[in-house]
Length: 274
Ligand SMILES: Nc1ncnc2c1ncn2[C@@H]1O[C@H](COP(=O)(O)OP(=O)(O)OP(=O)(O)O)[C@@H](O)[C@H]1O
Image (tube, rainbow, N blue to C red; front, side):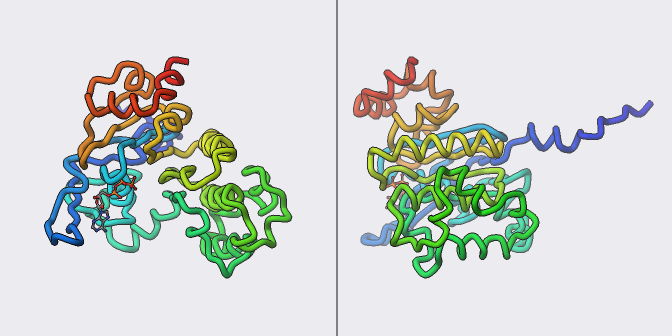
């Protein structure tokens, strides 16, 4: 006898399968001064599920950005398998990759560098809407800005007329407009004034809760990570040396390098205990 599947079976299956699954990823770069090829990402595997918030931490140069860009199909893909929303990036064509693009939105460190200086906030949003009419019709510009706690007077401003915090909120709003399944935030607060960093992080957390998107947060700041993420992967020289729930890793680190990172950020361990 055939068992009948519930009507929402495909949706349930999609929700439980990972948004991003990286298996044994290796990405090489060529050292610009010596010409030598080295592994910026060395045999890394990780998973991000729907609604989950996962951090990649490590010192500068440990390979965090290279990993995130490869994993989202925005940088050199290297070797290994990357599955985005169940599609293997190595096996799909350009057209399918283009169709997946809106599902992954990246918020970069430098908000002013991410915005077109010749476009007002309104015309930037208009351009995104024109590219993805159906996907972006769920909200008005005014309501979207309200979600990132910006007033509608911002709509007619150009990037140079925005503070760093405002510009980063605009970048988050642009990402939210697409209703992505995954938001990748690469050091989203490190270029900002300390006074607005907490606000921007709170926004990212809220955005995740309201849209249900997963978050992959890249940071060298363990305090930031412990306040936003469920799970963490610690990278050192291209390799993931420790992974686990933030609370466990920060409270009881097993790896010497994680201990060193924590020692450099005494606040993080305290926060993890709360
Ligand atoms: N396009 C590139 N060509 C050559 N080398 C690169 C390239 N991009 C990154 N690298 C090198 O690869 C290594 C990893 O860089 P990556 O930016 O991924 O590290 P990161 O952990 O994100 O660092 P940061 O926190 O400073 O952004 C570094 O040694 C970097 O200099």
